[in-house]
Length: 361
Image (cartoon, rainbow, N blue to C red; front, side, top):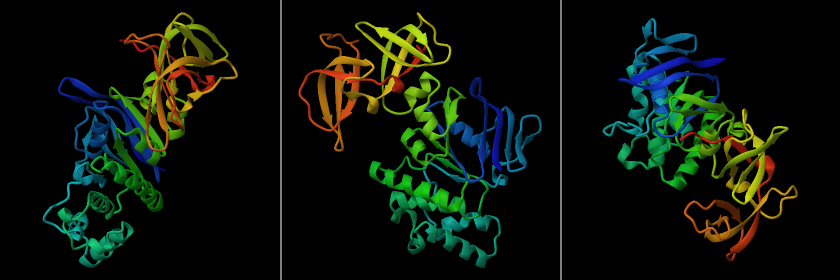
């Protein structure tokens, strides 16, 4: 069942187009993340669904109810019955945890006995039952986040909208909250649309990811598809930690392309429409580069410049031997030991290299 449908949505800020024909669906029990750089339109799309931004044309449907139609008008935000968790949590500072969570039910004139029961159930589910009498300033950031989620869930909305819900947490707490949020969404069978600029967060929590670029959906798919099978250079570079090499296409055959630069050549998967003689960019994830020979000869000899200890691994930086210029090709790789400087052979498996037309400047 489709809980939320957006069709050909356009939205402008003055004379500046922000959404340029976005279409998407959110199915029951599914988590979809809107991912993209600043200015890509992801927060604007979420706010348009919530009724907090006025779109120019298109259609938004929640369940079987049309809440926006560019030709017919729109339903106000307060009547869309959506749960919304703001980036800042937006808790009432003078209200207790209990009263913050109860507020949406009180607005809907829910009987007092039912309100007490539903609020207590939500607080218990979120591990906040013992904190009901506290005020927001007496809570940690993670606890405040859970209160905001509880307030969004207490009236059982068909869709919950999450606007960068973890961005105010420190790095360690963010990882813990990410696992908690995914577990909660799955356990309660929620349908959630989440905005994030953090691709690790999107990969961990989502069933599907919509990657926005300049007001349009660049690519969408499961986390595995988005990370392991990018269709464009933008998607490949945005997802993951990458190495990129600029060169020219020397050969294309059987879905593979050979890209060549000054003193090097590599095979990789050819993007659609790639042709011989075209300027191109090869991309490989940092974790796919190995310090070894490649059995198919897809390797480069490079100079180890430095190593950085990251705790669970080392990160190495390599440059083309003998090339001290600013534009010298650099590659990164991971390993599990400290290494001395010197020339190393790096294997770049052709199955893990993507070759795309070079982005226009």
